[in-house]
Structures are given as structure tokens and as C-alpha cells.
Image 1 (cartoon, rainbow, N blue to C red):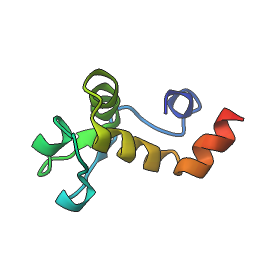
Image 2: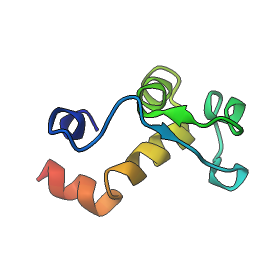
Image 3: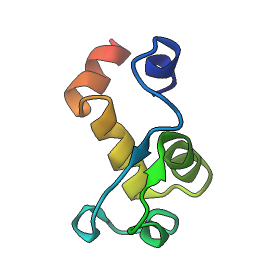
Length: 74
């Protein structure tokens, strides 16, 4: 995600909206923001500091999914 921000392909302040259907088990931060969504910055923080699974999934989606992550890592 941060690589995409450095490249100008993403913005930390971009707000991502999601629904109850997007929530997965153990989402202590994202479950509190269903109505207003969260910024990329907030999702990064939730994923890293609270191990919020929905935040991690939403961030994975923003980079193009598992296939794009694998390509980036190679």
C-alpha cells in the first residue's frame, strides 16, 4: 500500500466505504465505522496495530487482490 502511495497511485486520505457484508471475524476497528467508512491511513493503522482482518482485506482489495500482491512480492 505504501509503495502505491509513494508512486502516486493511492492516497492515505482516500476514504473507503464498506458494508456489513465485508466484515469478517475479528474486526474491532472496522466494525465501528460502517456508516462513515475509513481512510487508507486508518485502515493501515487498524490492520497493523489491532490486527483488524477486515482492514487487511480492504487494503488487499485496494492493491488489486492477492494476485497483485504476489506479483509485487516477486
